Picture 1 (cartoon, rainbow, N blue to C red):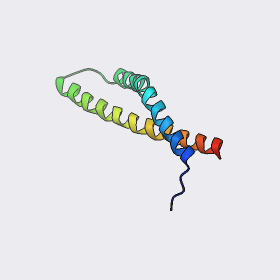
Picture 2: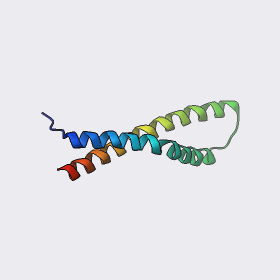
Picture 3: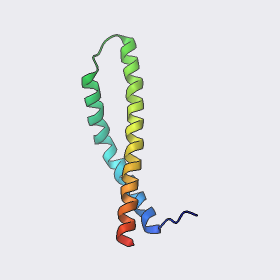
Length: 81
């Protein structure tokens, strides 16, 4: 059975809250960098860019949540023992 600590789970929840706060500025910077590398062209290219940006936002959200929840769990588990 998996042994999860209560302190670690609370740290993970706090990490998710931090991830939610950090998500907006982070995705804005990543999206701006992505847009600067993509030339605006035909309507088909713009439609493809919109789909790619939606996937990029989802990927950033997933990595953001996993990273901060993991760090929060690890820190809380270390501090609380």
